[in-house]
Amino acid sequence: MADQRSMTIKGNMATAMGAKLCRPKVVPAYPITPSTLFPEKMSEFIADGELDAEMINVESEHSAMSACIGASATGVRTCTASASQGVALMHEMLFVASGMRLPIVMAVGNRALSAPINIWCDHQDTISSRDSGWLQFYAETNQEGLDLMINAFRIGEDNDVLLPAMVGIDAFVLTHTIEGVEVPAQEDVDDFLPPYEPPHGRLDPDEPSTFGSFGTPEYYQEFKQAQVEAMEGSREVIDRVFDEFEERFGRRYNKVTTYKCDDADIIILTMGSMTGTAREAVNRMREEGKKVGLAKLTVFRPFPYPELEEIMSGAKGLAVVDRNISPGGFGAVYSDLAGASINIEKKPLIKNFVTGLGGREIFVKNFVEIYEKTLAAVEAGEVKKPLEWINMNQEVMR
Image 1 (cartoon, rainbow, N blue to C red):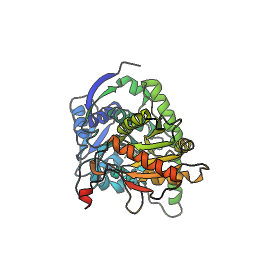
Image 2: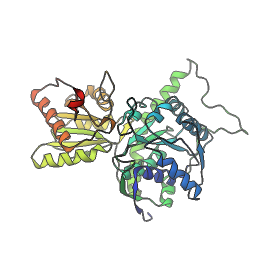
Image 3: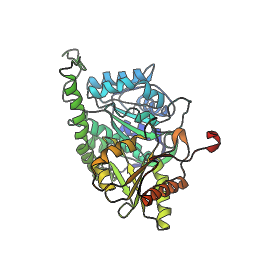
Image 4: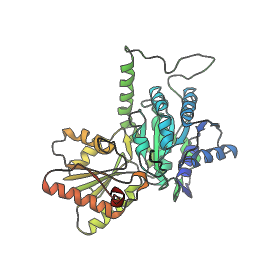
């Protein structure tokens, strides 16, 4: 392995550096806060001759994803970036990309959806796209943002997968925050990620073909089943690629990463940048003799229920902390986990906590409160209130 280069950069720059190292050929994009720096840096890489690619400036996020679909269908590697209302505007095209089995990669600066207008962090934008057939990865740090972009291309382009992928980095907490990262050498990434060769042909005027053709009732359901099977098959591919990435670059990724869970009675489950705060809270509570652990979700789609079932089997209580909410229901991670755990013979009591919406700060004391509320439910032997909101502004509520 060649020497990696140390840089101190913003999260958007990290995802752009990761994308650049993957040598995409087409980068369609429309700027939106907080992801604008991604297309800016990609255009600079292209203008400076560091990246041999075509930058397409489009009139909307819907057009950006449409251009990605067209480019990917011709057989070239392509990527883009968006956030919030931009992801919502391209929603219908997300289904087209996955249905056509096009391994597009998109960096998303996770941002709240309007109304009211809010430019700060939560996961509602990508969570609202969870049924579109895209792989979904969530970064805790800028380093993870860079690395997950590289892994996303490798996983999505695998012939047993062929699905698009989103890499989420929290708005401002990561996108605009400067952190140290290790940037792999280009030759190592080239060796890890070979040129993209679509296995089922490509759009070519000299050899006409049809992509995304009309699906009648006799065929449509089978297409959907094939997508589901590809998503299920990606589980093994993700594990294999993460293993190879660690072997080559020295950094380990898992679908779910545990911290001090071996003897934990209560486990806190997080996703994204809040994990660092939760880890500090766990450390402080451990010093006080509290048997608490932490599990971090890096892969949300496919949902890692086998790994979570194993983690849950040894705990008495599980606190799922969601940075999203489905009105009339629960947080998305909690909902998926509750459904996946139905067949566990000895499952822990599970509580859902929603916090951090619209950029609301999440403090160590909030995770202590989450632990205490979950422990109280365990000691009572029942969950009377499955969903609780944390760190609410009582003045606003009045």
